Image (cartoon, rainbow, N blue to C red; front, side, top):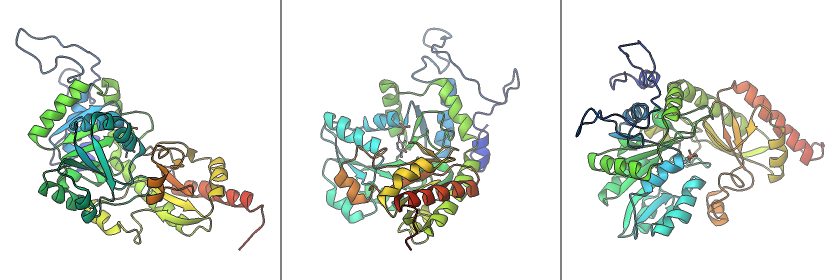
Length: 395
Ligand SMILES: *Cc1c(COP(=O)(O)O)cnc(C)c1O
């Protein structure tokens, strides 16, 4: 069973582990039952109906809450479902302050759906406290941050934002998808709500769609439980099991993702076809120091810009081991072209302001051997350069 005195690696490996007294089973079973028999009128086993709570989902939710140092966890059918559930805390006339370089789906949810319910949002570099102050309104209710951001890997000082937010009675919500609680625990830095697309690193194998919400504080946890059950975008028992299975190896995977991504980022820094590398583990990254202060490691994704936008098409055609695909955080390496994929819903002015342009590629580095990934990327970059430059060498 998980125990808060154990180190995080041990707690992860033991998620859902039980001393099942009858059979001795090591892993927690998948309770597929939608209904639970009541012992008698006015009594419950603690389980009534699957949407409200389910034994398998509950084990996952308690583990997630403990890993993030929160009070309660809520497993949702996707990261977007988790975001929608969180945003249901707000209503007509409420205003949110949101990280400028934001996951495209979150932006779309705020601008196209939440706006219908009278919730407005302003986008700002959340590392700039003066900018936060200047867009704060009397009806501002919360600050929503991603750190690092995706794809540009901008870092926000979580502790500074949380203390500013607290001084104005605002909630701080952190999307911790990219670092996971293995590397960063924003509730320990003052955040109120954590959201994860557990589809990414927590699941880790590109094979389960899931979201998690973790809350701090009794009142907020009770309100979130009400929203989670009322909205009903909850995770199924079998996907809850699948997610726990992935989370057991999170520590091992994150260490390898971190090592591979930093090794490849350093390789690309020296590559003649590349002229910018965005990785907060590189000492000249503007967020390097804050990242080191608030996290114990770096995520496995980073972005880079090729010198010529024309390299992008042949590069994506020539990669073999690395797949051209649209997710992140799995054991298999994936490359994404944000301007036309994940960030296509963000208006061009905002994309230009943050630098998501047609030369930018995002690399979700898997756990393959770094040398094989470098060889694949190197071949594809050389082939792309040769196609565009007609096979002649211009130095
Ligand atoms: C993928 C992602 C989401 C959305 O999660 P889904 O599981 O795809 O619904 C939200 N935030 C971030 C940072 C993501 O990468």
